[in-house]
Image (cartoon, rainbow, N blue to C red; front, top):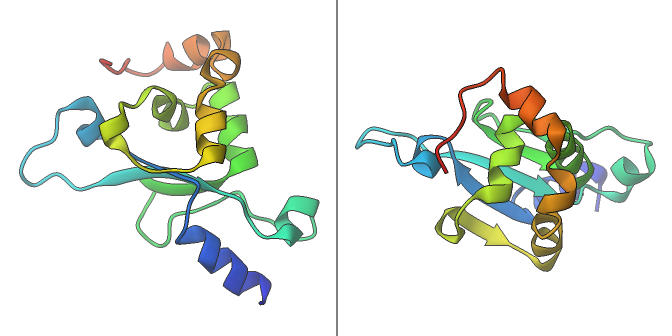
Length: 128
């Protein structure tokens, strides 16, 4: 399988996919779209650094990001609101949840730090 085929397969079979945005915060209405944050294990070449993969949106826009697991963890640890909110999402918002995702989400207390407060003090706080 080529790198592109492996990446496409991974993008369509994420380790974690969480419904975020208005549907996470309960502010959705009849016309609301679906926003997602997901992560994958990218192909071997991306893991060893011979190819780049940080994220994709599959052409759906910035509210539907699929990150590499490494980039996802890095963003959560640095306090990125878009990814950190997934660490607190209720189970009904989690559409895909593998053993790896379970392990990463269980590290919430380690990954979410003062960086989150510093970053989120610039953003409106979610109401979960």
